[in-house]
Image 1 (cartoon, rainbow, N blue to C red):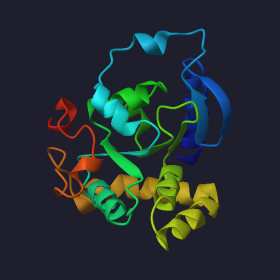
Image 2: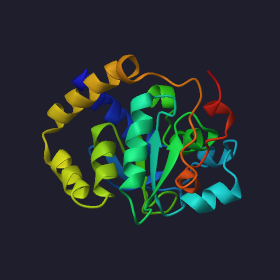
Image 3: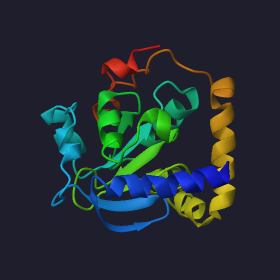
Length: 204
């Protein structure tokens, strides 16, 4: 399982480099630029995001999560209530917005099988992390002491945190349930969620 995850991380970087120009990369995180490439294939994809959605996400920290997962929705609400600066925006993987963000890296929600996070989203400084790295970076955006917990998670040996992430991923539906549609957050939080009303979020 871990060898497969590491190999997928390497394959992800290779596939991304065919569509975007890497400026720096390490492990599960890569800084990419979507400009100045000779390959415009990614530009020819169907644009799913509205101008309003693009403006809401650009330059922010964007967390992609499984909108049907009971645990993932709890984690997102946990983050939103501990992010007083409102740094993060939350996008369900199943939404058209989430699919468009992943497609730039040659991924889909089914192929990635993981939460993901974008730092400086949709800018030349964009960085993309997934699996346990996404968890660590999400925690680092929160107020103390959770930002320090995120740093501790990032300092843990990768094989250990990836093993924990894989185990939780296998049991999350059985233990925490699965929603048939992406649930709406409270009115107070709703402005920080993007893509909740997309078709992919209401399919069973």
